[in-house]
Length: 343
Image 1 (tube, rainbow, N blue to C red):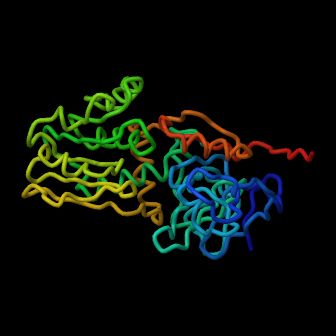
Image 2 (image 1 turned 90 degrees about the vertical axis):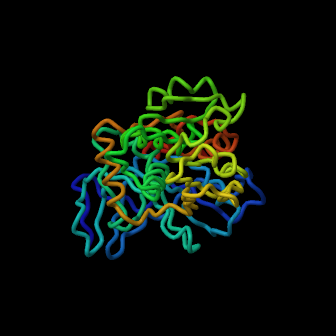
Image 3 (image 1 turned 180 degrees about the vertical axis):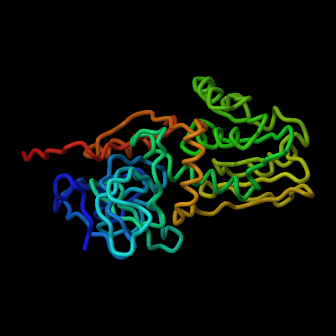
């Protein structure tokens, strides 16, 4: 027996963005369609979320060349609890929540489902939304902020009590860069170094960066002296970054990178430097979201939303993301009414 909201009855159908099969190549989004689908029902230990908003991540369009079948897409979700499956005890109907629906990515049984008016998730992976963030803002953070939070945790955060801590966030203005700069500041870094286009430097300094280098004019490493950095977070993952960064990292420091663009650990690391391949984000534990909620509600984690795009224009959103140069994130409005016009 499902617990249902006290307002209007849950509809039986919803608008959703689905894939119709594997795309031919990166950037080909002809296999994405916005259609009517049945509203899913939560099973044991699951909740049904009335989705307010979602967002676009690069992994969204990277997945579209995979054989997903006819699946509702989307990782990030924010909204309210519409119904509870049996066995749910922590959340209640009406709670404002956020989550990353990326469970199973590593095993190939990917969950997804956020690009729709309703989505099902395990109660254990859903957190209460930060009160300091709107639904739109909250929807842009789960995947990227969880990635940064877990990467920094692998690198030993929180770095409490460590004086003159210097952190490099390789790419500053993108999806993972925006929360990473803020988390580094929240964890006590006194010098936070990043790179971006000059037009984004003021924003990144407002978020907490102390040094913002113009990547058009060279690399971060050209500006840093030997043994001057404690943590390098390579959230871009380009080939050769570990080797280029190694001289700057102090013995006892950490290099952690996100895979995906050919990046790897250095084959000639400095003695005393720990190298970490981050791997994939673990979205299964609400406790990590709860930790991020606490940071956000202290005013230490904000969202940067370049644009909010309605769900029925999801292909336009994918094209914008694929073209690059998005500052922060693109949000998807999943709550707006969509009246399909037949021609």
